[in-house]
Amino acid sequence: MTSRTPATATGARGSAFAGASGGDPSGIRDEPTRPQDATANGLGSGSVPVTGITVTRHLAAAERHASLTADVRAGLTANPRELPPKWFYDATGSLLFDRITRLPEYYPTRREHAVLAANAARIATACPATTLIELGSGTSEKTRLLLDALRNAGVLRRFVPFDVDEETLLRAGQEILRSYPGTSVHAVVGDFERHLAFLPGSASGDSGSAGGVAADRRLVAFLGGTIGNLRPETRGTFLRALRDQFHDGDALLLGTDLVKDPARLVAAYDDSAGVTAAFNRNVLSVINRELDADFDLRGFAHVAAWDPENSWIEMRLRSVREQEVSVRALGLVTRFGADEQMRTEISAKFTLEGIRAELAAAGLGTSAQWTDPDGDFALTLAVPA
Ligand code: AVJ
Image 1 (cartoon, rainbow, N blue to C red):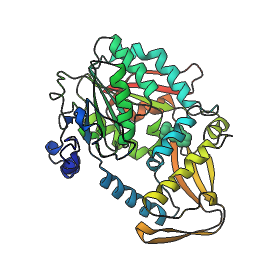
Image 2: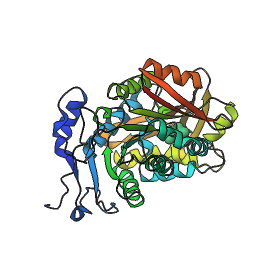
Image 3: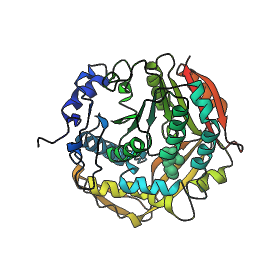
Image 4: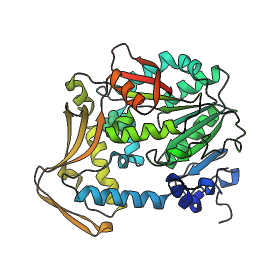
């Protein structure tokens, strides 16, 4: 198809991945989509029209599928079994998460919003960034608080949402384009555990000149407490990778949920309306659909537990009976014992000192730290030490 957008960097994926381990990422194409490419974004029906958004794809559908396949094979054959939380977020999972953020028990989103609303202007003063990069977007309301503050400071030029899900990115990008005329949007489809080296404006992944952005100062926002999905070692690797590509003036804004009464923590992950339970089981629907499996969702119960040793909430799925599951795409048939539990997510909870120590270990100095009045949630602003 001649109308296919050149921004479909499928052919460049190989070099993007080679680049991730030190190769040359120059094969990545970053080109603005054109109006006639409106429906040619590879999303098929239900796709979002794209105009004026530059898209960089590190993670095309085939790569995503290979990654899911590997994760599910490893996870279902491990003992105990475990599935990574990133696979919750298909269209249904993203909608369910959105409902979670409005549940009475799920305080983190509201608390973080409050801390951000109270301090956005200070953040923009401390880091007058021309580019706002948001890792794991879909938090558009909070994004707007930051974009407004940077716009009011007169510095904002570009918004870079970075997410695994292209549809989410494009939808968010369109809305931002509409509300912030004059601001360019450069969406990056990728996995922040693997493609961090290619943030726009960095030495290796720069496309800043193409977007007309020079002397780029970047604020990287990683909000929602999503860093808590990573184990401590992985957090260290991630923070170090981020720090390694920071220039002077760049900063990280990190949102983290804080340790509190375990009853409140557990309630936030086991709401009375059962939305979190549906969100948890949704990973089985994703596997059923994408890997031709036959998980019976009614055969798995939602479990949320506080682990004080590791300081994290764990979500698990408990097989309510002995049952056999077939994952045809893997040629795998596997038996779950009655009451067998499979971990689907960890969500770490932090202390203010603990956050500063983890950042310091990665070469990042804390320049400011704020919480909501109740001390439920923290925002930390950090710069290269
Ligand atoms: C989006 C990863 C921050 O860990 O609180 C919400 C996901 N899981 N309820 C979190 C989630 C269950 C959420 N994060």
